[in-house]
Length: 335
Ligand code: SF4
Image (cartoon, rainbow, N blue to C red; front, side, top):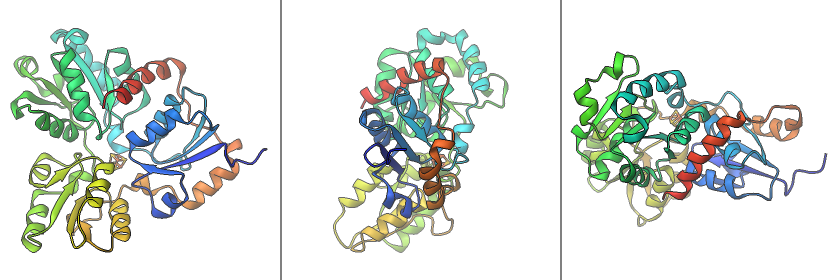
């Protein structure tokens, strides 16, 4: 086999271990890494150090022209698993009585299986990340009366509030209950129907953590990810995607005190690269680690690079790929 040099790239998510990020060609959030995957026609292989849905999206965006490998195939996302296709289809069947395609646009957060992305593509919808969720809401509510947003209720809710919607404009679809636990009137009135999913890493941050930080460090800035619940986001100084958090820190003057509400690997790296500031994790009590992101080790990456020819790349059936690509390309257009 020809050497890999020049024919492959290693993409790493911000939540990966630092030793993995150091080995990568690029580090970013899922939006930034998707853009790279979509544009690097010059490479044959992508080694994606992240979780399964990210590698799947990279494969779809490369239009199947590049082989994509996930160094640790067990790295999944529990939030993505909270929106199972059968449950979403069941919900959509009920929502058909409220106008379906004509009145409702499905929007899926990037953190979802390829089948759900394809569902959005089939129904005029799109994908968003925490970087472009506001733009996706704008796109959706310009064209349809309602949005059906999954799987993260918190990103959906925080985006709605930022967009100017009122709490009463949004309802939660509890997939464990008949009709999502909602009355006809609630569904009719809602502008956004939010799937009852969440990220267990970000929902660990609580409003009292923000209050405690403010008491201890009155000068502190608090920045959090919008997968945190709204009471935390409302008390923070700023909220945004992982890339936003990185830029926010970089924009602060030396001597700043910054408490961050997101995954611990990113926080540790920011603290390491900015010794001129005091940077720490918001709660001070929990270790907000994404065990799925943490699964990928340097050994996994080395093994994958050496043996990829004997392992299975990430693939997606053609029909799913086709519709998921429509929804993902809309995501890249809408920003
Ligand atoms: S941090 Fe949360 S949303 Fe992101 S991959 Fe981990 S479990 Fe999924």
